[in-house]
Each structure stands twice: as C-alpha cells, then as structure tokens.
Amino acid sequence: LTSERYGVQRLPFSHVSDSDLAFFEHLIPGRVITDPDELRLFNVDWLQSVRGCSTMLLRPRTAAEVSEILRYCNKRNLAVNPQGGNTGLVGGSVPVFDEIILSTALMNQVISFNSVSGILVCQAGCILENLNTYLEELDFIMPLDLGAKGSCHIGGNVATNAGGLRLLRYGSLRGTVLGLEVVLADGSILNCLASLRKDNTGYDLKQLFIGSEGTLGVITAVSILCPRKPKSVNLAFLGCQSFSQVLGTFTTCKGMLGEILSAYEFMDDKCMKLVESHLKLSKPVTGSPFYILIETSGSNSAHDEEKLNNFLEHVMASGLVTDGTVATEDKKIKILWSLRERITEALTHDGCVYKYDISLPVERLYDLVIDTRARLGKTAKNVVGYGHLGDGNLHLNITAESYSHSLLNAIEPFVYKWTAQYNGSISAEHGLGFKKKHYIQYSKPQEAVLLMQQVKAMLDPKGILNPYKTLPASS
Ligand code: FAD
Ligand code: MLT
Ligand code: ZN
Image (cartoon, rainbow, N blue to C red; front, side, top):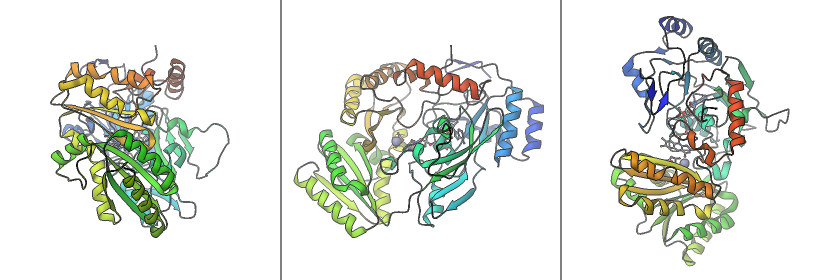
C-alpha cells in the first residue's frame, strides 16, 4: 500500500488486522468480502477514474449491524467508505486508500408504503428502479428518475442529493425526503424517519445528511413522498436551429404546458452523434444543432394531447422548432428517452471523459460549451453539452483519446472560474466527491466551508467517514 495516491497523503488511520477480520466475521458471518478478485469491482468507480485498494467489504443487513460496525471502526480508528450502487460520477463512492467499504447492497427491504399519503419507507440499499417497479403496481412512482436507476440505491441518491430527469416536476430530494435513519460515526442511531409532510420541531437534521456524500453518517433508511403514477404520458423529441430557440421553446412550453410539464432536457448534435456512433441508436429527427425532449405527465390523455398539440403547432409555426416527433406509447417513449439517458454511457466509449456538472442562469448555459470548445481547439476530441435545461443544469463533457494532464490543466480551473463569474455552481447534482472538493470555494464562501468543516468535526471527530472526500482538509 502506497502512502500517497493522486497526490494525496494517507491519513494515519489503522490498518485492518486479523482481529478486526475476526470481529466482523463474527458480527456478520458470510458477509465480509476479502477476496481481491471480488473486491476489484467495488474499488473502482463507474467512470473507472478513481481506484482504491480496500481489502475488505462489509455487507450489513440492518441499521443495528451498521451501528456495531461503525462503533467498532470509530474505536479502532478504521476509515470507512459508504457505498451504494457505485454509480457516482465524482469519485466519492470508492476508497482512495484501504478504507473499509461498507455496502448497502443487502439493505434492500421496503419497510412500509401508505397508499393514502403516498409515503414510502424503505432501507437505503433498495435499487431505485426496483422501488419504482414496486410502486407502479400500486399506481405510484418514485419522485426521481435517472439514467443509473438500474444500479443506484435510494441511500446513494439521498447521499448525493441526486437530481435527474424529473426534478423540474417533483422537486429535489430536499423536499420529497420526509425522514431519514442515519448511523453516525460513533455508532449511534439517529432515528429521524418521520413520515410527516410538516414538522417544524427544531432544526431539520435530515437536511444535513442529504447531499453529504457519506461524510457525516451512513443513511440506513429513507422515508420519501411519492407521486401518483400519471395516467397519461407524452414525449416530444424536437429539433432546434439555435440555442436561443431552445430557450424560446422552453419559455413557451412553460406557458402553454404549465402543470403537465414533467421534463425539459436538451442535448447538442455532437452528443447525439456519439450516441449514434457508439451505441448504434438512431434519432427520429435529424439535421438540427440542438435537440430537446419535452415530457408531459397528467391525468387526462385527451386534455394533455390537446395541450401538447397546440403547443407543437405554435412552436412549429413560429419557427422555434424545425422538426419533431411525439410518442405516446410506453415502448416508443422508452426508446426516445434512451437517446438522452445513454449519453453518459456513449461518452465513455469515446475515450477519457472530463465531466462537469454546472448550474448557471439558463440563458448562459450553452455559452460555456462554446467557450470551452474554442479554448481547447484540437486538443480535445469532443466537447459536448446536454442536461436538465429546465433546472438550469448543464452537463459539459470533454473527451480525449487518453488522459492528459495538460488538457486537464487547460480545463480546470477555467471551467470553474467561468462558472463562478455568473454565480453558478460547480456541482449542480453530482456532488464534489474526491475529484472536486478542492474547488468548493468557486461556489461557496470561506465562512461556509469553515462551518461545514466544523459540522464534520462535530459529527465525525476522528474523520473516519469517507475521508479525502467533499471538503478540503481544515487548516
Ligand atoms: P454511490 O455511487 O455508491 O455513492 C455516491 C456517494 O454517496 C458516495 O460519496 C458514497 O460514499 C455515498 N453514499 C452512498 N450510499 C450511502 C449511504 N447509504 N449513506 C451515506 N452515504 C452514502 N446523478 C444525478 O444527480 N442526476 C442524474 O441524472 C444522474 N444520471 C446518471 C446516469 C448515469 C448513467 C450514471 C452512471 C450516473 C448518474 N448520476 C446522476 C450519478 C449517480 O447515479 C448518482 O449520484 C446516484 O445518486 C448515486 O447513487 P449510488 O447508490 O450509486 O451511490
Ligand atoms: C445525466 O443527466 O445524464 C447525468 O447527470 C449523468 C451525466 O452527467 O452524464
Ligand atoms: Zn444529470
């Protein structure tokens, strides 16, 4: 084990010993993984960009077991890396050195669902797509949806405050999560698993853990408000000749579709080309520099279709949109959505990916792509832009044949400085993790960073939970 990786020094945590192994095997027999081959997958992130060298993965089933694990690790000064589906995109989900990986994979039980209130209570390791399938049978859906739904866990979603494709309609997890059960670094169990829409008794502690990326506690259960399954869903895939037409279509769409609008996503032609060439998917509309996906969800298909048709007639007649297609059946809707959802996957086939996830005033969103493209010229293979336009969230991605330090230096801090000048956020939804923690000051004042470090020190004085992540070390 090297004492330095990625220019980071290993902190003086204990190393896992034989007696530690014996303790864990006794606590969760058969659920301690030490086989290097099995561990390989859990040591590397989804983008294959950060690789740890953990020698132990633990799979508890209950909060009580997580509590025993953390109580022991805290006493022994053993570092712990909480891990859900390992789909995180900022290197936060894998160890940097030999941190013990604490996986929520076996904490996958639904605890309760109330079909009057729509409140679901479940363990943190439930896979998002499985929860959605479970709810659909009861005529409900999860309030979030993202391309990683088949692997990501609800606990990981909450720990990253994941946004996704329907935030525009159902809001952020900061609103839909009603309660959490969290195990703190010293092993104590914080039961704030309320199932109430309204609760103003003291500070709202659950908010501290939403988006804390495994640095403040291990989320073991989630209470979440779920909407009814819409009776009618329509999806329009449209082509626009300029970004200002994408914006014009958005404002028109908010005015004309209003309460039934459930997603407004955009992608440039360059990322559509990558989806076509690397994944062999074909788009239904061609010849436009920009494409948009507009989803409506409502309770009356005749009403929704009439509204959507009026809107489409209007944007076509006014020249905002030049071409398009509409899907109403499930199968076609899924095919169209995959053109957007699988961009992330297509990019990984294009080479080394430099991934940026930025919040900006919506009218500035694409300027960053144009300026980055101009700055990098031929040193980059592709510079593409897509994202959750309805939320002011741009995904700027740059690909190159292989990793290059000089290319990284040309991108960073340029992208962060560019974002800061418009008071944007350098992480709209993926978090800071391992890769972006040193850039937090571009989006947060020093006083806020200091307070975050104080909160971390109070909840996890030995710093055993997900070290090297999210916050720069306090001076
Ligand atoms: P992991 O990757 O395992 O972990 C992520 C972070 O959370 C780590 O810091 C980890 O330590 C911590 N963590 C995990 N579980 C817990 C827990 N129980 N308690 C405490 N900490 C925990 N993100 C979006 O926001 N919007 C998108 O649209 C989106 N689309 C994606 C599409 C693809 C194809 C991929 C690969 C990723 C996408 N992501 C998106 C990023 C990622 O899926 C989300 O961040 C997701 O919420 C992570 O969940 P996970 O279970 O995989 O967590
Ligand atoms: C998305 O919106 O597709 C995700 O956040 C993943 C990505 O940024 O590639
Ligand atoms: Zn996204």
